[in-house]
Amino acid sequence: MATREQPSFRQMCRATPFRTALFTLGPLLVGAAQVLNAVVHGSNLPLLAAVVAATVAYSVLVTRYQLATFRRRTLTRAG
Image 1 (cartoon, rainbow, N blue to C red):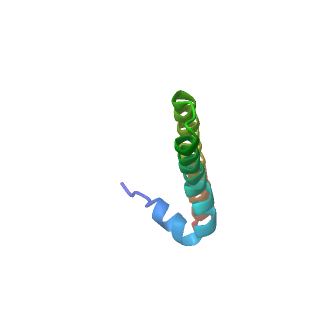
Image 2 (spheres, helix red, strand yellow):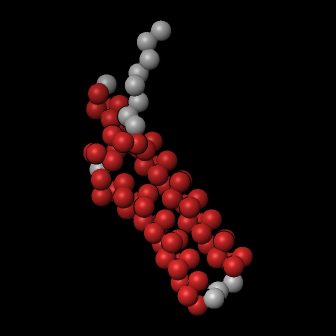
């Protein structure tokens, strides 16, 4: 049984570095900035945890979507 090698996250990073950084690292940097802001100003910890969880979840979902789109584009070009 033949198997096709699917494009990986690393290949996506090489092909589209700006888009990958924007959608993968961007939300994580926003979450880190929110943590720093909350620590400096003494914000509500449960609210901060919710914001950080939302930014991490967003980053994961958008990265998975971008990877699926990249795989589809790569496979349609090769096929």
